[in-house]
Length: 47
Image (cartoon, rainbow, N blue to C red; front, side, top):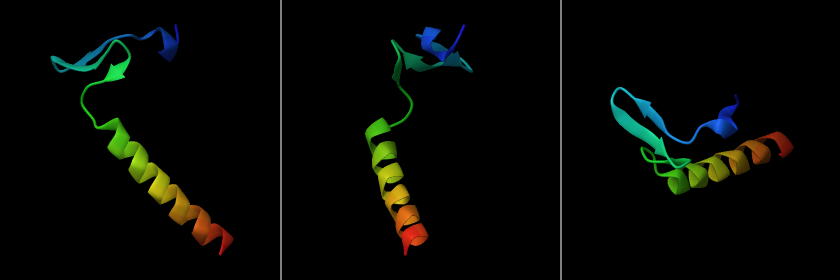
């Protein structure tokens, strides 16, 4: 079994993921923050 086999995840009685879609976080907002942070990191590395 791997993560690809997981369809639904429930934790502490709350559905966290259903049909492979995360229900407890704004994934678009998280991805935007990740892109922003990675751009800052690369800029600091490359000068």
